[in-house]
Length: 347
Image (cartoon, rainbow, N blue to C red; front, side):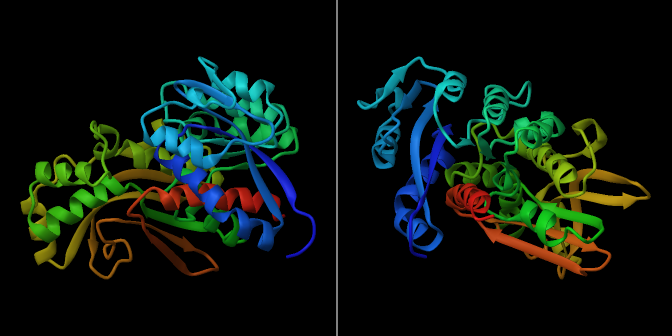
């Protein structure tokens, strides 16, 4: 592509594993984005728990990543650092075109991500989110704000990392009726169950290995009790199934009661046990659940390896479509955010 590039001024909230990878991708891909797509991405503001940093001329992504890698906050940036500055104040005052929300998920009230997304949309900024909490708690409200102000709300990175689960359902299956959806949407639980089954590890040993590999948090309860997958299923219900679900509508069961013996018996019987999020159409409603599920070995989700996630859509006219991803690091999740940015500006 030749000619003049379109300048897109970005704000980023949350510079953890995903946010840092996103900054690295912006730096790494800037030439190809400009040459192939006519986009120039300029990071003009970042915020984390230390405060904020703002620079209309553009912050250096490499410098932000270096500081974070060394254990500093963005407020320590020599150029534009603002100790104690809030993310919400940055969004309220900065001149920008798009907000990237990658702060930790707060499922109690969605803050600060929810307030920042509301502010950005109200000011006419597009929003790309990796933070699932605001979508779980306030999807209809945020979508209405985006429509009212003529901007886009994109969030493919909130479900199954870099797997384009939402984009596939919303765009490619838009004309189809989705009769059933099945997904292995949580990497931590799939890693644990796969390692227990394949290497005869105990639950405790598989969890410790997942934590050492960076796939599980120090406190993994949200994952292993099934609630992370449940949150993602709520987002899929709203965005793909057009079904206004809440967490209260789901039946949720985690993997903490699954033993190595149960996994061995499943393998001996030609099955695999996976934590599966399911939405099954029943008339005008969907029955939604997250629970350990015994799958035949030929099922697409049964074939997933330890570092994979996947989804299967059963439709009325498009057949059965499955997709999977190998996600060894947070890079694909960050790439899903970049994919959403490109999608907004390539329309």
